[in-house]
Image (cartoon, rainbow, N blue to C red; front, top):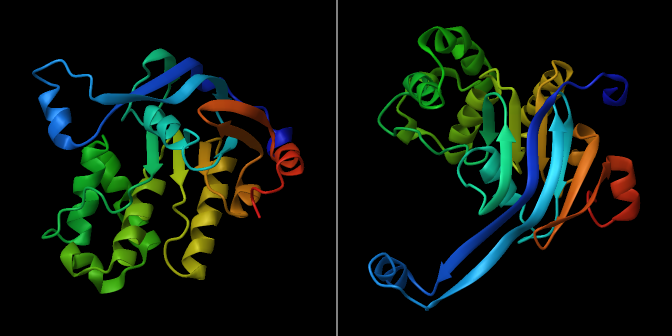
Length: 246
């Protein structure tokens, strides 16, 4: 069990992180503000003094109601957003199971999209060759792997996206409600793969309101209105806040 394994060095560190978004009424006012100082906006504090450290090999759930700041935390970990104040440190390669169908080229085949997407994600040619067959086997799309992605259903594209990200040998795996892909057999295969990665000392962050957070994560960070209100074991969290994970 994870509690019995010795965890590694800090791999993700948030120190007193605040994120403030400037919100405009519409895109026209946002564009005008590029050229003329405007007062027609609101400021929204998505994160307010958030601090935590996650070590290599931990499996951590990040929970909270809509608007709690979960997505902002994930965006900072994946390098899409940056803090207004405070510091965020992330070490190693991050694979994010967020927008699973993003980045595909419709007229390329599934096989071609594997190479293309892996290249965009920063993998070298040798690494892509090494994992290509693993991705194809995991996605299990049969003959469709050599058909244009525009012929795929949304479920098929999600399977391919999941297969690419989970097989790219990440140091950190970020999952945001992604285990809704495919049928029950494919979901089971995805969960088994995640457990396999945890056993290999990969750090897993999982945002979900489903019961599967208890199956995968040992620790939980609970956000509310941009603040960390609880950070402890999953059992403690479910005891203290039973409305989550039902």
